Length: 224
Image (cartoon, rainbow, N blue to C red; front, side):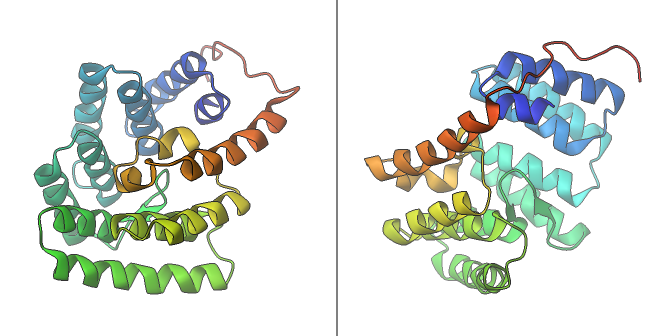
């Protein structure tokens, strides 16, 4: 409900639902990290950092949680911390998926390496992820995940037109979270001209159509 409310442009309602989810299950990584994203996007950096610290305390040995935390570090511009978290996640388990950004640890790690000037190592990671995601896209697997990740990789590599094409394909396959794309560090290179906004607007039009006649309660029920 919280995720849907934010998608529908109701961040206040989204926060109430997400806080209720965290109250019911403090270690629920995907709910708590979405709350962190929401707080950061609203400029509430201290509150967002506190929620992130609480999540790491709950699940410090979980690779998916570390992936989420690394993603937040990228949003905060702390690339060294993000790199450390990504590397630790890889030592703890398989290349875990970050659901909200639809990319995996190696893509985020590749970005930190790319920004640090370690382009050859980063390129190897990107090539690995591209091969996997292109095959998934061809096989119609994982919905919008493959094209979104491919858009992110192409954007980092400076291949703007290809990145926008992949982002458009993500919309075609059901991607509906333009509010998250606007804060995605890997997509910074796409924000310079109007086409990026046009792709996001196409997603927003679909969201607006879905929202008509749909009402999300402002306050989650107590208990249960």
